[in-house]
Every structure is written in structure tokens, then in C-alpha cells.
Length: 472
Image 1: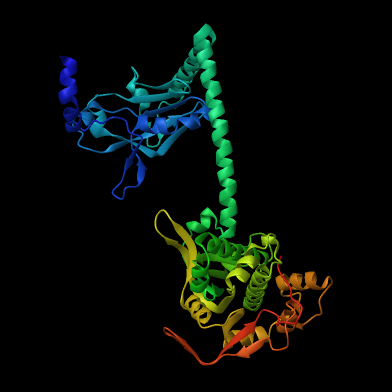
Image 2 (image 1 turned 45 degrees about the vertical axis):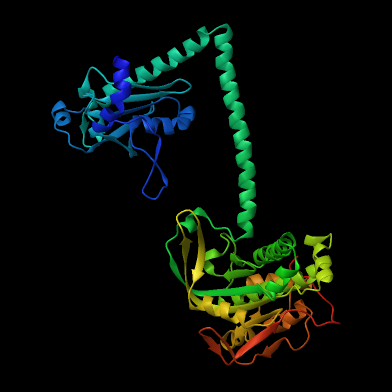
């Protein structure tokens, strides 16, 4: 009858006095999982750490019974002892609304690896009194806790040593099984981490520090958008599988080439790619670009190299497609596979953007918008730029003071390049272009963007000229 009474009325009574089962996690107002408060829940969540650190004792200080009787809320701090030092735990609190039903003088919890948790109090509650943050009876408390840890270790070893036959086999088998499971899980996690690292490198990976960075104002960033020309026609001619094959290979080329020339893929936007070069994402420990002119040169080389590699891809001469699948699709369906690009420079805001569970580090601002508008009004296999950017590139020279581009030029010529080489002279020679690398555009207007003086940088050699697949 007592059991039936608890079964029928027990849950209601527990809810009324604010007691609850031990739940390790709960859902907040947004449906996200959060850790529950409570000593036992904390100990069970952290039990994995105790396998490495041994036995750990958690306790709260002496609780005057008068305070317990008058309790109407509040919490108590928890201290941990691991056999060496005392440590106040900031991520755990004891709710007085719950423990005052038990009227304890103190609260001691110990987790024993492979056996579970035990909870107890002591016969001398004064041992737990504190002087501010320090234990008043530190030496006496340490002595007793050391004895408790020693007793638990001795009992555990004695229990294991006395186990015989089937019982001993079960204990050993349980440990062996746990080790095998842990080994398998670690291997699986290593594989996932390797796959994740490869994926992050392809999309401009950021560190955890950058993902939680404070948004900043970047005064001299370089931004470029590139987009497939006539993507709707290509999409209608190909099967979904073939279209994604084409698009992913082009994106792979963009990501790999950007990394080669010190740029970063900010994001993939359908068939478009957002690339940037700024000091915020320079590789640590390496000499970065000397300033804005060199960043502009690097972005120009990056985009032109991507265009040339995609041109090689559709002609069947790119190492990413040794089976010539893209060339076969292009010839079979009579489609073009060309991209156009727009490039701009200036100030922007850089920081983490997105939802709580999905966030990227990106740049936003007027310069980013201008790069996007220039791409939309550009021409295939060309980089669309404004006059002020052309003036900077036209006056840029390659010297030892531009170390990154200098190394690219040295690799090109196999020796020290000519001092004070103009950028466009090098660019023309690097990609085997004709003399008309720059040509002026007609006045352009797109959405809120209008400009009468814009220019195109040619990136692909004309038919009849030797081709190059730079950046491989």
C-alpha cells in the first residue's frame, strides 16, 4: 500500500516541494540543450575527467540549520578537493530550495571510477567553515579527505583482488569493452576531424578565436566576387549530378588557388564565390603583403589564375579532371563554362555573422557591395574594376618591398626578377596575354550602382596565343 501511495501521489508531492529526478541536461526557452545545476548532475557529467585525475571530492560548507529553516531561495558555492588542493567551482551551485528538505549540516559527494557516486555528510560540520574564500580548518579537512580517498582506493583494489571466477571475468571484460569502445570512438572522431579540416580549408577556415572575435573595422581590404556566366542555361542542360560536379570542381579550383596566393574564400554563394584579402586573415608567422597595392596585385593574379584553370578544365587539360568529364559535358551539350569577376577595395566591417548554431566570419560594407555590382555588370573571363583601382595597379611595381608578389615572380622566371617591373608587364607575361590587357567599359548601371569610368582586365589569352594553367 505504501508503494501504491508513492506511485499515485509521489510525483505531485515531489513537484510541490520542488524536488526532481537527476537530469544531466535541460532545454532552455530556445530549445537549446543546457546543463542542469546540482552536485550529482555535475559529478555525473564530469565523471569522464575523473578517470584521468583519480578520485575527486566535492563539498559545500557548514550550513546553519537556522538558515536552512528560513530558506526561501538562493544557492551555495561548491568546493572540490582532488588530493592536492582545494578549488572553488564556478560552474556549479547548490539550490537551497531542494536541499533544505534533507536538513543536512554539510554535503560531500565523491565519484569513484567504475563504481559510481556516493553522497554523505560528516559528524563535525565545523570542519567546513570558511574564512572568506579559504577553509578555516584546511589542514584538518585535508587530512580527513586524504584518509577518505585512501580508503576508497584500498577498498576498490581489495574488491578487485578478491573477485574470483565469473565475477572477476565480468569486471575485466567490462574494462576491456570500455577500452575497445573508447578506441573505436576516438578513431571515428579522428576521421571526422580530418574530414572537417579538409572541408574548412576549402571554405576559408577560421579559428575558434576568430569565430568569437569582436567585430572590427578593416580599412584596407580587397574584395572580389566571381560568378558563372549563363548559369541558368548550364543548369537546364545538365542533370543535377553533373551540374554539381561542374560547380564543385570550379569551387575547388577557386579555393585552392586563393590559398596559393594568400587570399581567402569568404563564402560560396550558389555559383558565386566571395574572395577577400585583408590583414585580419594573413597567415600567422609569415610575411604578409606590404600594403594595399600588393594585396590588389595578389587578388588580380588569383582571379586570373582561377579563370585560366577553369578554361583548362573545360579543355580537358586540368589535373582535377583527368577523365575529361567536364570537357565531355561541354562538348556534348554545347554549353559555355565561363566566369566573370568584380574587384573593389576599401573599408568594411569584419566579424562573425549568422545564427547561434551556424556562423561565419565575413565582411560587409560599401566596398563589398561595389565588388558585387562590378561582377554583375562585367564580362566573361575579365575582372571588372573602377578607375581608382586601375590607377593603383598601373602605378604598382614588383620589388623586394612587395615580398609575396616578388616570390611569385621569382618562381615564374626561375631567378631574381627585374627590379622595378611594372605589374601589368609581369601580369601580361605571366598569363601569356596580348598587349590589350586593359580596355574601357561603357557606362554601367545596376541597382543603386552607376559608374561612367570602369575597366576590364583581360585574363584569358586570345585564340592562337599559347595558353597557361597558372597556379597549379
